[in-house]
Image 1 (cartoon, rainbow, N blue to C red):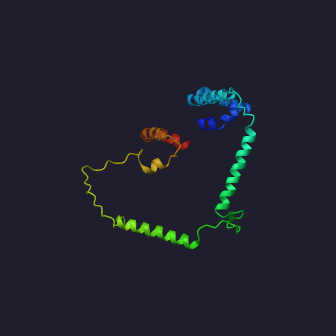
Image 2: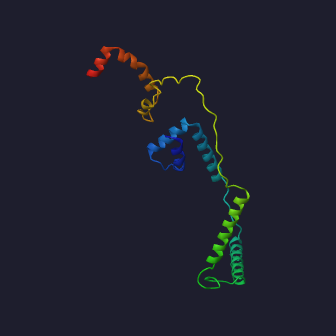
Image 3: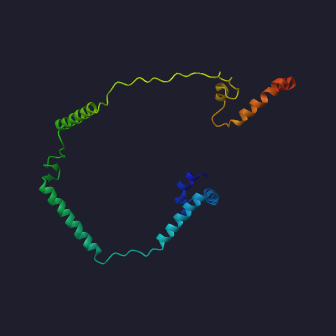
Amino acid sequence: MDCRHFRNQHVAFVDNLLPDTELVAMQRHVLECEACARHDTAVRRGLLIFRNLPPIEPSRDFATRLEARLARAREEARLRAAAYGVGAFGVGGRGRAQGPSARAFAAAAAGVMAAGYLAVVALDAISPPERLALAPVVATAPEPAPTPVAAPAYLASFSAGMPLWPAALVANMAPVHFANTELRTVSLTR
């Protein structure tokens, strides 16, 4: 089991809602992984503190005060809507809220585009790219011959999940197999 799976199943683990096999795997992971053990301990301590808190009891007149405050808020919202001319169906009572017109939106978009163009021109952000000239490369020694282990075709023949050390081992043993004719004939006959 990995830590991600443990964290995803931790709530069910704390509440004992997991099947027995999963529960045993979670318990085993807690014993093996120090980070998940710390997480489990912190969550269980927090739950213990929360469960031992005294219950919160509202005052006797809490419900009446809450209802009065909600009524005041509703009245303020109604007065604010009446002051701004908002009816039950939106602005002016015409069935839907009216926003800026398409012309106003187009004018605002054109203004933003013009301001962006002027900023680019003013900052000279659009300029022709400079030509890059790199220093010439001079070879001082010939390139060494590629080794069979480093040949791209050899390395490409292995899957991504296979470690490279078996390939190096095979490459080191290859001259022995090819030099010995008995081994070569035995391996060919099998």
